Length: 250
Ligand code: PEP
Image (cartoon, rainbow, N blue to C red; front, side, top):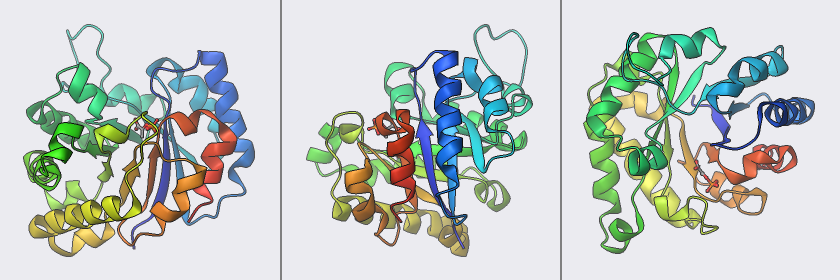
């Protein structure tokens, strides 16, 4: 059975002190959330060690927002999968549209990142999604299918079992526009079908999150859809109350 998950992507927000405070506020409220819902927070790299300390003993999992496509060595400015594990991470977001769009992250690079992350014991939260132009051209199913095939089809079934997928329509991220529950469900169902074409029954166990202006007021309707197993939350994850309210929306 797949797990419901609500994951908070803090992006490039908060100082270390503010981040630790936010993590502690999430911990304080996390007892309200049933055990059937997993909670994950993804602070910036600089915050990982103190946030790991702040969430110690709680149910909250720690995620990075990215990791290097190389094992180790002379790659100035990069942070490896091994380093993330040593900092307390169990997850890393990979292929977020902001990384694809602003930092030229390609599917080929993402293959390396996803494989390395898994090899070091991390579960990737692998993001896919179409931009506005692609949606308006009616190409959203094709774009997302291609992203899944280019990266996740290179994995073994054992590797795939570690992956969480996040569908995030780029036009809905940070814009206040949310995909309707119907729009989100039809593409989540498509993602699960594409995963099933390669990995068979395993597709039923893969958690697929929705991301894009998800908030307490719309989470219930989205999470009620059969193929939406939770959310990857940006802006609303910066307020502990909102983040927990979303996690209580199943
Ligand atoms: C995100 O970037 O992962 C995201 C979903 O952001 P927001 O919730 O702010 O749209």
